[in-house]
Image (cartoon, rainbow, N blue to C red):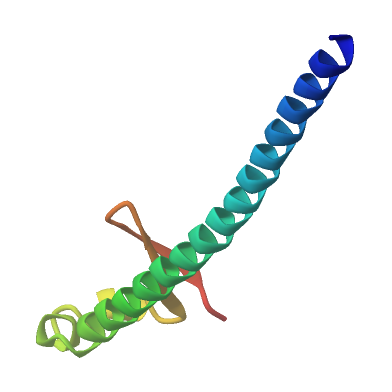
Length: 93
């Protein structure tokens, strides 16, 4: 009788261990996939920021004589990313 109980307990422990191993593998897979999503979002943000920078640079409002002094203040700056909808600037010298 005790041997049956011990075998039953050991079988339950084995199944718990197998389930834990599967969960660890799933978590590892999810971390990998989340990293890929984060890299993709960063690439999209960089593309949007680059296009925004190019749009600002080619805008007639920024290239007019009236605003030329304002544009000159931004020389050497580059838009490097968008975070939660706001542009971040970094000196790119």
